[in-house]
Image (tube, helix red, strand yellow):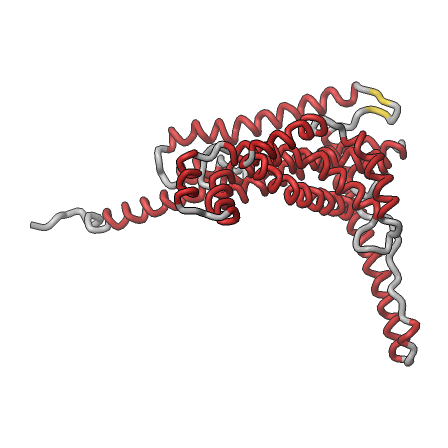
Length: 360
């Protein structure tokens, strides 16, 4: 007996392809959440025909509601901002802030072209000296023009990662020691309670004086301003990682600890094979908190110490007092917030790669 439906034999293949497509969408969902794009999952499922009405509820919650909230925020901002007068004029609305962002982008391009032209002229001069047999007169002349907005952003990102790296290298071993040893925990706990609440504004003068005394030249691998900002970030951001690492290590299942004793593991093997894998979720939680704290601390340190970076850009615009200064400061505020969000997403992605728990 044969069937009259020509698609009868194709149905199982179509169902298999459909199931494979949904499997891929579900696998990608984890990374959509990491990137802050969780709304893509219901959109893709609805497009693939998986209960479109049900997916619309998730699309409304994950995409439409946030967009609506942003739209309301921009509308209120545009309506209320012109009514507030400051010493620099009326508070700029979204359109003025966007225009200043475009201006900063164009200015960065112009400065990059100017720097490239300068470096090309220096290279041309040095090549002429080499061709004339006067290689001993060749000089590397540094470009001394004002940094662009993008260069200031890169300076801040580089500084916060350097300070965060030092904080991690200090905090994780100390946290492991505190979690494994009650004596180490008793020794470290009062220091943590005393120094954790200290403001970066209190650390900054101390760090500046010590770096100036120890690092007597700017000809080294790092400039003084870079070290001052980075060390201030380190001193303020290591505590969340230290505390969470100690908590994670102390929370390891006692049965696992007993197994390590039965197997007579040495200290290094115990830490690498047992302690770190078990404590990684809480360690990464501490790292995410530390990076967020470090980013906030850095902006304050750059403003107060006038070190290169976004903080100095904000302070210089405030001191400048031009008609566009307030709009430029608001561009910097949004930039700081967006970069802070992206830094957290980077740490969340690393956490997703190295841990297998939903407690994040």
